[in-house]
Image (cartoon, rainbow, N blue to C red; front, side):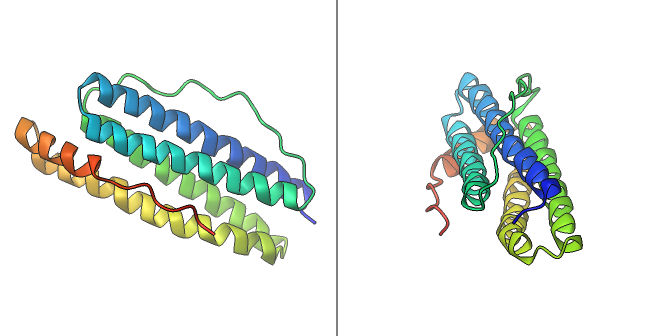
Length: 168
């Protein structure tokens, strides 16, 4: 059985994952406004992943008989100065997700809740991949600078991203 502290933290994380989806949808809308459909496609896939993460936590909570508490989702940032600015915002957000997940994992360890810690291990590994992925795009955008041709090439590359299969 989950402790009240872990139920609260997991519910907070579930809501933050949904907020993360809003952040990525907002970034997708910005990219669409810039006629960068490949970047928008990449952001929309990120949003879908975040919803999947929320659903994974939802299922864990309900499987263990815990209540799911949904909160209001705050308005995401929507004024980006550039594509790079949007991706740097995404990178900070992913780093914040990792920090939050590590804190929850620390609580699970301190409570000797190995089941929850094992559950969170998947998320921790996923965050390493997410930070790397977003960081790589940031690096490429820094190299490209204001080169419109380079941005269009990266737009095409990101537009080819395929939806990842749902984790088992």
